[in-house]
Length: 332
Image (cartoon, rainbow, N blue to C red; front, side, top):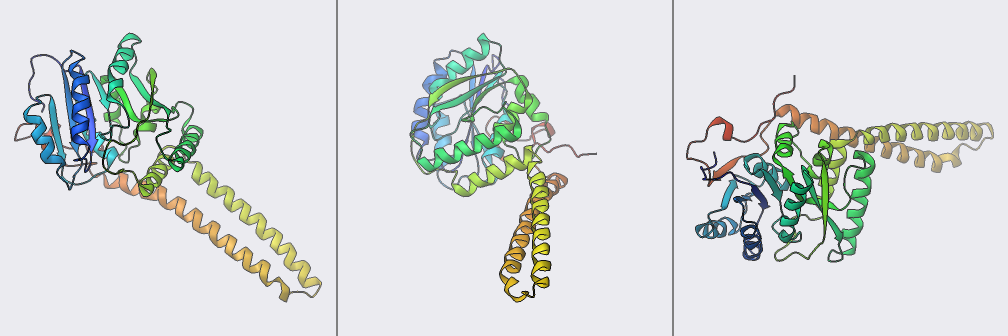
């Protein structure tokens, strides 16, 4: 359990990080003055997602002179969304801000987000990237395709160009914690809640140091999790592909019968080969789509914890059951 404080925590800032030793000094030098300037009780939850570099050592060193810094170390690399889940689960602030360690999303926007939430009584304030000129052309193009696809599948409530930089009220955090989802994509889950929301815009900056932790492979995995977790559209796509393949088969049947009637059966090899390749490809696509959904069902049935905490600097040596990793309730 978090250690006792003289006054309630007004703001928690959750920062998932993995191998961010190069970015940590700049991160601390920008985040700490912003939060100290708010004049409210706060905590900074750094979630070390099984880093293999000196991230954990540097965090421990910074904590010696920064009492508001709380370190949660996971036993293994569980992924960005799982690390974010660990921070949200253990945060205690009346409002919670999630921020990446690469400083592409400016912490200087946190006071504006908090002020907007209080002034308009909002449960969610999104950080929206109004300018992504610092990203590569390929990154901007893929991000545009992703958000257009998600708004089509999950609904217009999904804000375009909003990543994981957001402010949540305690009510919104508690609602997220109650959800049984294991493969979480917060940029879709949070809008799905339907809580009153607002947004602040900013210019996305280049990564301050180190290398991106979201290469192409992880971006594709995020897109697949987003689609399969929030829409059955791919299954309907498989149905339409099957219907299209059936029509192609009918056409080939007519062509084959016509060729047979005219005595030209041998030259039909090309069309037959093309048809077989097409039908085989459609079948593989359909099986792959079904496999994605079956895989999600398998993961849900296993009901394994999303993450395991090795150490929490704000927890006592012997944790109570309430402090253990969140395990989704079994489905009945």
